[in-house]
Image 1 (tube, rainbow, N blue to C red):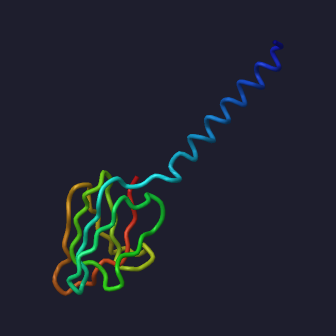
Image 2 (image 1 turned 120 degrees about the horizontal axis):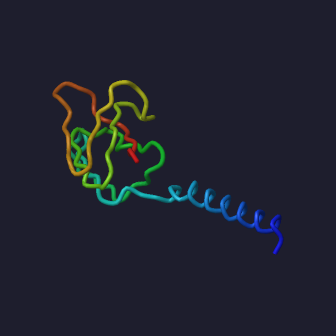
Image 3 (image 1 turned 135 degrees about the horizontal axis):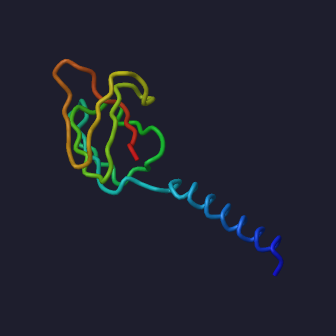
Length: 111
């Protein structure tokens, strides 16, 4: 086998490895359950949400949350996961809004 052909095969294998590694997180989920209570005192459970993107909470928003997943969350008071008024909730912990504050309306997964 010629040196040129071996280099081509080695380069192809390296590029394939990088491509697979780059796509490995596309279908991943946060293993576990996120439970929250809405502003109308309705309980909601989300099982293994995707680690990608912004996730909206119920229209009434969330006033309490329990993060029983293997990853951390960032909660937002807006529907689009933007704004400075965010709250970090570590894996296997929870949080509750302070009295007279807006509920959380969306979250992202820290991965």
